[in-house]
Length: 358
Image 1 (cartoon, rainbow, N blue to C red):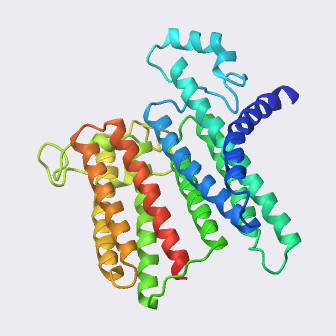
Image 2 (cartoon, rainbow, N blue to C red; image 1 turned 135 degrees about the vertical axis):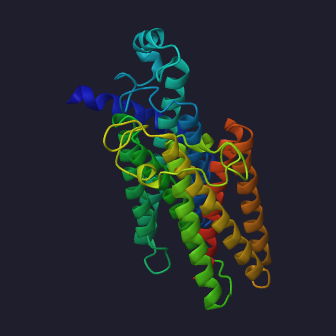
Image 3 (cartoon, rainbow, N blue to C red; image 1 turned 180 degrees about the vertical axis):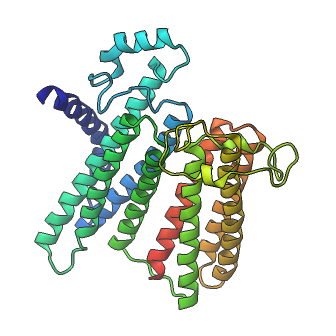
């Protein structure tokens, strides 16, 4: 039992060391602020680092480093790849282009260290929130939202472990991505709660923002399903899909069987090209719907919140450009990372706008 907990404690300690720098910077920069102001600044810092973590998680997936250390929380029961050098060397010698190499192991473990650091920052926020509530019960913001965020990041860590132990099971990997996006949105909402900046708008416009937010969230889930099933290049042309076909034969039933191994059907057979093309086309159709919805929302916002209209148009344009680049440029890693970053930014923008319109 102690041997199994030792790597967890070591990885958590390294994550704590990662968090020290941001905490010292935050403490230095916010010394003159009020307690609520310091919490808001820490939330914004954690929001930024969570955004970085999501992008680095995409980098981990795109470099096929998700199984760079095939156990959890350590690497072959060591706190770092340095302590697992012999195991990694043996695996790399047996399969030079396999899932375990020295480079992939370091990428995977750096991702875990960063995640541990973000978790520690969220723990600090939750503790400080309850302390502030005890000292000024009437005026202090509710500590329950930081507490929910802390619980959320613990669940997210559990799904991070499952992505490894279940060997990149597509449904688990997609849920891990969505939970990461959810964490980002919780932090964005929490940041607004410390200093509300309401935007006056009619009820119909608030409902429109909520509808676009739901559409964008569904589209991000579809994008995660495309990525975790490696279906980006199932359609390698635009606006057609493959071989000049606008609508090739598509197998939605197989493509959207959620509980199955990576690259396999639920019955154990290999997932066919038609299923991968169906996953890709569903995301492409969803992109058209969301893009049109954002354009309509930006037009409606131009009178009540013109700056928000411009931000949404910029986010939509970014997603369109990066998404098309993935297809026509054969999925370069820079475009793929830009697309993930754009999705995170779009959701953060929409949830912040919802918070200000409530």
